[in-house]
Image (cartoon, rainbow, N blue to C red; front, side, top):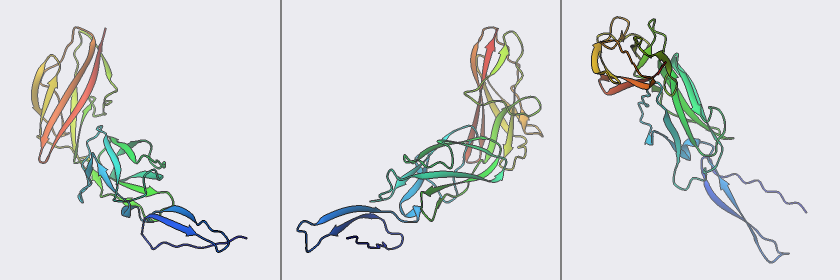
Length: 248
């Protein structure tokens, strides 16, 4: 014959349960172990960014610098190996987000590398468990400011590991632009440049938030060079790198 039972664990509970089946007609009992997962992902795990719990005010990202986003299981949670996806949404601004593995795909390892490729503003990360009713939503993350290498008219240059080519024996004219989280220029801010084989120097951002090294760079031998720009702001330090491939 066929026997059917409907079992409903209490809401938002999780853990391991053992069902025991027995019959007057059969001597041995049959035990079946089952996992119960809460319908609310926040009951099962907490979010880490860069190995730290996400604070109520969110996390500040720097454009071009990846951050590792993970789930840490709470005590006795059966969520290990369970399919969970990471979602990313722009809240304000023109941010371009990238994730490895991709956003919106279920993963069982619960680890993603998230990078803000370009733009300014704020964004929201959230986790969704397969067939679970409530997501784990993180406080909004943001870029407090953006420092980037730019062409003469403000167009962003590629970020490492991409590079630009320049010829030996010719001047290399470079600029950086500093924008706040709304995309507005930050004026009168000192920017320190570290230029391979030419030392370091500091210049001030203009009305467009832009500035440049105090002298022109010329290289007489081919090879890859890394240029760095650094800014000290209240509560944060920004750094931007540019790879220049000097060719014959």
